[in-house]
Image (cartoon, rainbow, N blue to C red; front, top):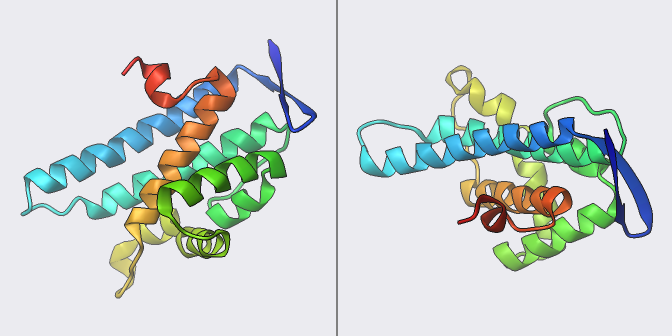
Length: 165
């Protein structure tokens, strides 16, 4: 069954599989949050790498969800390339929220997206390289904002409202 939504005057149709994509992204987001919680409880274990990989993958899935909602085909892992695929009405809503949450200017946000663009692939294979770094605060904020925006598109409510928190 197809549904239609409107964003900035453009009607978008999507199938119910989009809801599954959103929930899939949420699972990886939640897993990343659990890695943060465990890392804080057990400092002798290092859960930062799984946190980064799961958070980056959740960003990928949330961006792909938006792209599929817009009726486009999507492939790849690079967040910057996926970001460039979303239409301007969705991109602007995400950008506005990121500017509020991060207190960064638009150019700095775009640079930060570029800096985390390949985090999923790079951090999965961290053992192959030395000297890798990432601004995990921005990665977390980006994932949170993407989850919020997809939830608003699909359910017309914030994630907390959706979950009944």
